Image 1: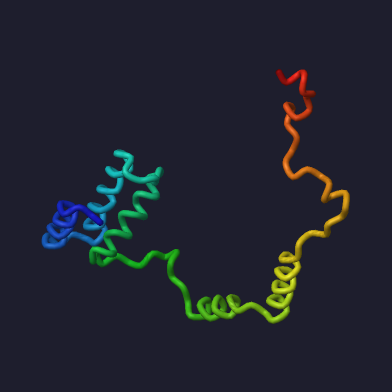
Image 2: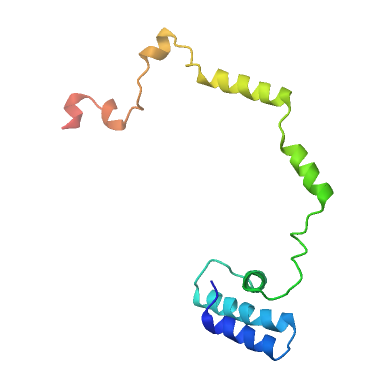
Length: 130
């Protein structure tokens, strides 16, 4: 959530007829200050710019959309199609999960084995422990 002062400065820039990038610059400036204060984990100036522009868009500054977030209708349909799992894969997954549920085979030797690892104290005889 941007600070009130930042939103007010951006509105003032808009009233003065300044460009959208100038209005958004107020939000970027605020984010750079936040990073310097250590308010969040962002480290680089690029991250500060990205966060600031995102906040500016949410606040109503008329900036062009992020070019990395654009998605064409062809990409949307292909993504939708790829998210549907094939019958062969789902059958194989179900079989693998079924096998996992089975308990491991028990042999007399494995039953005799201790459940916890032996410590050096267990290896000492009773007279050496005292």
